[in-house]
Image: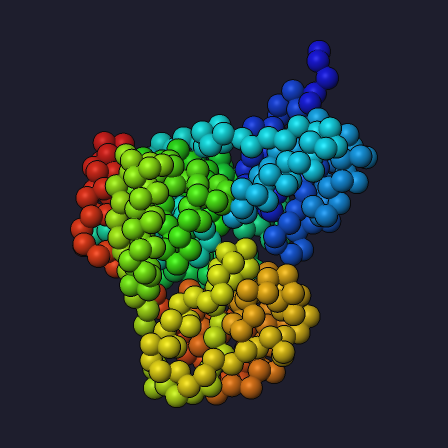
Length: 445
């Protein structure tokens, strides 16, 4: 027998585990010596457990910080490094490749189809070219179309396994009690709660073969609710990709967002109500050049403030979706748009009052300064968020996270929620594409 090829998988607790499960687990041609971890705090220093890793890894697989990659390569002498995370520039990927190649290690990116699991029911996948482009509101929009067609929808969310990986192999969320049962972080709640509010079950976890087989039993149609700008984990009957005209050109310089852009059946250019016409047209031109088969649809992202009188003329602290400001690299989101729309007096900068992990976030992502990212990857970080809010001198807190954040943290300051939805510039275009999948769902039953 030939010697197994030694592999290190570079990841961020998502795509890396999926790549392992679909390509390397139980495959004697490979020996995965470690995962590395970046982007998300607190995911390194633990094991990918044996119960998930399979019979070839009775002791599990170590997860080490990506900052230790050079030492890991010198110690474990892998043959290949497999890049397995998202929302990074092509330049960044190239630098990682150069680092590995210089140490004598091959550098690989797995092909999209190789890791896509086939479903027994139709799948609509919603992904994006960047974090913060508007996947969640688009997923809600599509799910409402399917609800109107009388279809039973189950959403499957891109992984966010920040706790006990063995316990998180296959998670089902149908109620708020399920969120509490699984001790969900703010980041998880932001993605799961809107589906529950809409009357749908949502699955997530680590083992996406197990997840899809469970979800198929209660769904007419599966909605893949993507994370970051990652590719879908499932072969899709309709692939909708969100492009962001507030970041024109990013559809061509970020990995794997460009791959999504090139594979899309439908490209939705979101936020047209906030963007310049020339930037919208630039994305349309890119679509015509890179993916001429795709339908291109313009959409707005209208925002609403629940109690505008509490914000008008006041000094407001704005809380935005965390990943949008961190690896999404935005400097503002729907909260700022809504606050300005209702006539906020001033937007208070929380940076000088940030404590512990929140201060660390500003140091790592200086673009987020001036706004408070809703970081909450664990109880300690939630506590840091609370302390930062309490320390910041303001009249009101404007929260533009997709959830009622007061379910997770308690502060003494008055808080106002902001909501944002998808609105097609020409209504009915997305419905035409979704209806074709809905008809196929009838044939599957």
